[in-house]
Structures are given as C-alpha cells and as structure tokens.
Amino acid sequence: MNKGIIGKKIGMTQIFDEIGNVIPVTVIQAGPCVVAQKKTVETDGYNAVQLGFDDVKEKHLNKPEKGHFEKAGVAFKKHLKEFRLDDVSAINAGDVITVDTFAIGDKVDVTGITKGRGYTGVIKRWNHHHLRMTHGTGPIHRQPGSMGVIDPARIFKNKKMAGQYGNEQVTVLNLKVVKIDSEKNLIAIKGAVPGAKDGIVFIRDSVKA
Image (cartoon, rainbow, N blue to C red):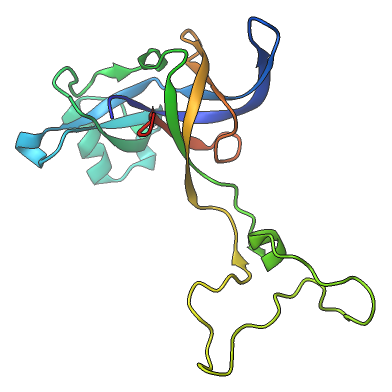
C-alpha cells in the first residue's frame, strides 16, 4: 500500500461524464489528516503512519491521548488510524496528508462501519424465503424453520439465525475515484461505500488493482 487517508461520508449524488453518462458517486470529505506517528522497520518492525482526523477539544481526551499528540507536536484529533505503507521515508510526524494524495482514475478500497439495524429476523438478516402466506401455515410465515436434527441433538455452529444485523466493519474493494475537489477536501468515488452520513471511512489504494 502506498497511500491512505481518513474521511467523513457526506452522502451520495450523481455526476455526468464527458459523453453524458450518469455516474452514481459517494462524496467523502477526505482529510486534511495530520501524521501523528511514524513507524519504521528499524523501530517497530514494519513501515506505517498513524493519521489523525477531525479536531477535538482537549477535555474530550484522556491523559495518555493528550501526551501522544503533544509528543508528536500536532493538534488534538478525534480519530486515529494506522496505515501500513511500503515506504515512509518521505513522511514525518506533523506532515499534513490531503485529498491530493489521490488522483482521478485511481482504484481504492473503502472501509467503514455499516448502518446498524438492530435485532432482525432471518428474512431481513440472511434473505431467507418466507413460508406460504395462505392455506393453513398459521402465524409462522417469517420463522426460520427447523433448527437442527435428532442426532446430534444440538444446533450446529454458524447456523443462520435471527440476531444483530449491521454495525460491523465492511471493506468495499476496487472503487474508482471519479472527481477530486482540493479546495473543499472532497473526493467523489463511484458507487456506494459502507456507513451512514457523517460516518468515518478509511480510504486506501486498492490491494487488488
């Protein structure tokens, strides 16, 4: 990986290319991010940078967090994320990473926390089929059905059942950067990315491009 940045999901819209095709895009406020820590093979065993995003008041940090930012000589940040990079020789603590790190046409991977949907049944959570809605099926149209077998008399692990749905980390691969606005720190990425509006997302260059 050669580059990464932290951003905030603004929402979805659509733009038009040169020949009039409609492109659905997600708009993300990417950066500016400050380098809060630099890790190298000599000191930590691998190359990485820790980026900070979104200013926060001192009263919202604990003592170790404040000491971490003061040691780096950077402003207090609300979100921290470490990105492993192939080469960090040109990066130092205190440097600012902007959306200009990426270019139009780049392929990126976007990681975010999906919308939480609470406790849901198997139809919504796993897309199970419901029972017939007539002819004596009774009030069990959306039940999951049989749980297991007689021998062994237990439910197997990983059985798709009702439970918590959403609110988990998901990464979408190979999305294309369509537009960049350096003045407003905005980046438009083709397609949908995980999370709700104002959710924090992590953008990095694609690992499979």
